[in-house]
Every structure is written in C-alpha cells, then in structure tokens.
Length: 419
Image (cartoon, helix red, strand yellow):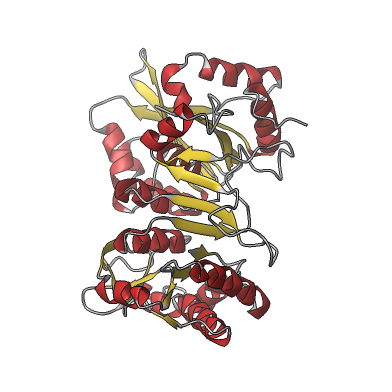
C-alpha cells in the first residue's frame, strides 16, 4: 500500500491512512506501507538546500530531502501502534533498498527483502519511507520527484506481493483530467503500456519509472483514493483502476468484464515542455549528433524532433522539445557550441503544450491520427510538431489552447461519460 503526500498531510490524515491500513491487515493480509512526505514538505526542504548553498552537493541534498519521508513513516508507525497494531518503520538503509550513486535521481538496483518478509509474515506492518535508498558505500540517496511510486512497486516486487495499491488524491485513472473535462470517465483497467505512455505525456497519476518497473516485474497495480469514509469498502472491492498486462486485459475482455473498452484509452496534456529551434543547420553527416550528443551527456531528455531539409541550400532547421525545467541549461549548452554545430539562430519557446492520445487499440485501427488532426483543425488549433509511437500520437500546440484541445479530442474520440 502506498500513500502520497496529500494523504499524509497532517496527523488527522495520517490517522485516516492508519485506519485504511489497519482494515487491510485485519483481513489477514501481510501488509507493507510506503509513504511520501507531507504535501509541500519536499519543496520546503529543497528551498532550505538552495538557501544554504545555491551550488549544493547532491549527496547532502539527499540527506536533507529524504527526511520528509522519514518523518511520515515514523508518525504512521506510531499511529498504528496507538490503534493496537504491530508496526515499525524501516528506513531505506534498514531494508536495505540498494541504489546506484546518482544522487537526487538514483535508480533502485536491488532490495534485500528477507528481513522485511519475515517481519511481515510474523504479523508486523512494515512502514517504509518512499523516495529513498542507500548507495553501496552507505550514503542516503533519493529517487527523484515522485519516486515514492517507484519505491512502492519495487517493494511489492521484492516481497512478491499479490498487488500494489497506490492511494492518491484521485480515485482512479480517467480518460482525461476531470478538472478539464467534467464528463471524463474512470477506467476499470489500463495496460502497463498505456499507463506508461499516459504517465510519460503528462498524466500525473503515476510516475513513469514506477509503471515501467511494474511492467518489468509484472506487479499488478491498483490506483485508489485515500479520501474515503471510515465505513467505505476495503481495497479488494473498491472500484479503482487496475493496471495490468495485455494478456490479463485480453482475458478480462473475453470474459465480458470490461464491455466499455474503447479504441482510445485517454487524452493527456503536458505544459512542462519547451520548444527549441536551430535555424540553418548545415545538412551534413554528424550535424544532428553535434546537437543531441551534448544534451544527452548533460542528461537533458529530448522528446519531439523535427528536421526540415532545404534541398537547394544544403541547410536544415531542427526543432525539438525538452523539459521546461531544462530549457535554460539546454540553451546555454547549445549557444556555447554554436560554432561547432554550425547553426544561424536559436529560437526558444516555453509557451507550448504537448497533447497526446493513447490507446492499444491504435495497433489494429486506422484513422486515429486523421481524427485528431481534423478535430484540432476544425477548431483552428495549429499543430507545431508531431511524434508517434505504436499506441500514442502527440502534438505540440500553443499552451493557451491546451484545455480547448483536450475537450475537443475527448469528444472526437467519444470518450465522454454518459449523462
């Protein structure tokens, strides 16, 4: 069971979480709980680091920001004990959750789970701070923002859990953000691939790495709301969203348990993108590598890429997107290498948004892209860039048109819930 920051924001909410955990344990289940820091706490700790040293050491940064989850894990264990449950906290280094040494963005390499499993088998509820681990030389690491989801899936895989329940401030995965489209529908089942694409293109329900790990380790993940009444049904019967393999979804469909399954699963929007255009780049072998090589070396992820070749001039314009948070670093890096790359001008734009339609049904149906482009064109929404995968089509548009585009596409693919 994993509980996010809004679920852990204050003693009253922690007591509510403890009641949910106690009810699950009372059914005879062996339970491990992964918790996030209280909502807003990580941001507060990050600001302390910046005030102390603008060029902070990532290893010391990890020591500071990992403390948020340490507090909530201890408080939840104390609250469970007050309710008569056997519970204890297990910090990342105590489990241990072994990671590499990439501070502030560490990756889990292994979890030594025998002691944890033995404690759970004895009836003890294990409360584990998410987002943190330990390097081979014993230093605390953190997994990057949203890393508690990854911690939960990794722990579930390590203890061979039947299921990993992710409790959030929403009660499942919807066809799109219900705050934008009131008629968005909650989905009963979503495949790992669909959730991975939705998470990567702006859906905030789960962190991308957690879904990728769940798919790799075949961990069944359920998304639920932690904001339920005291007398609400338990997680075994709550109508959340189950994230499963293609095979399990096919079986569910064959058994008629998901009759509403549609061609498109959902629409996602992401305003955390920025567009960079390099004009009049020499059209020669190695020119593109000279652009993207330094960005990769600086760990700046590049998403959409468009290259237009002017055959008569031997020049090309190269347009691509990077995370908005990395725009300044990317600009600086490329301007330093202007002569080596050989471009005329760098144009940056952070007033863009990426809109994506996702669904495994695309594999076997034509016309999905045509529907998207026509629906946007009919409303005068200009497409600046396009990228596709087997089950996703993404377009880059003006940020001001984000909500309109989401509503238009949600209707175009007939995803609106029945009135």
